[in-house]
Length: 269
Image 1 (tube, rainbow, N blue to C red):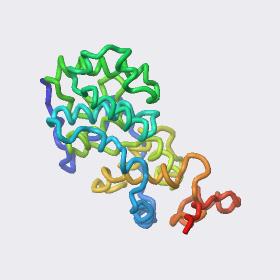
Image 2 (cartoon, helix red, strand yellow; image 1 turned 90 degrees about the vertical axis):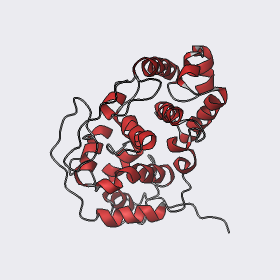
Image 3 (cartoon, one colour; image 1 turned 45 degrees about the horizontal axis):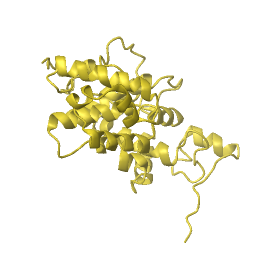
Image 4 (cartoon, rainbow, N blue to C red; image 1 turned 90 degrees about the horizontal axis):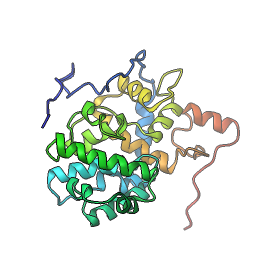
């Protein structure tokens, strides 16, 4: 089983957070008001009522299983999560665990049954193939465990940088880089955290954020912004009107100036 770790980077953390072939951009400078903006988002997320808080990938595995099985289940949850809401992904994981969610059990499961278990996650037919091929690789090359480097994880079918960095953090308890999904990518650009020109891809956003965000926040920011994006900073019609960052967020200021800013629905007493 191959488990060679990359040497520590300049700050002593494992690896560099980079993936093979990733181009380097001009370093992004820290936005001047980012600590205030960050603290405001923490305040707005303090209730922990977003779907990710109850059904995120870090909550989907069987906590009573062996460490190897827990790591595998974490990887499976991340593989299913792309283009899939947390609620749908969580239910699929519950069905898989009831069926038996180990490398060997999935290898013994026919494609039709596996498809029925994970449906209706996004691109479920493709993910059946990805899961089967991944299980074959893990059984053959990793002793029925999962890789423990970003680079090796990214060689698995259907696994990209976002999944790899999150898997390193959740499954291996190692900080390798920021996991940037569609919520993190969208919100970081709206806040002006990705430089004056912004970024076009989640991977560009990851590198831009890592240029200036303290490493102590690399793990937290995914949870923070994903939940914020699910509840308030929505893809369409975000609730800018009563956002604590409405005077600090460039996107929010434009919405308010145009008269199109929405506010949170008032709760009935």
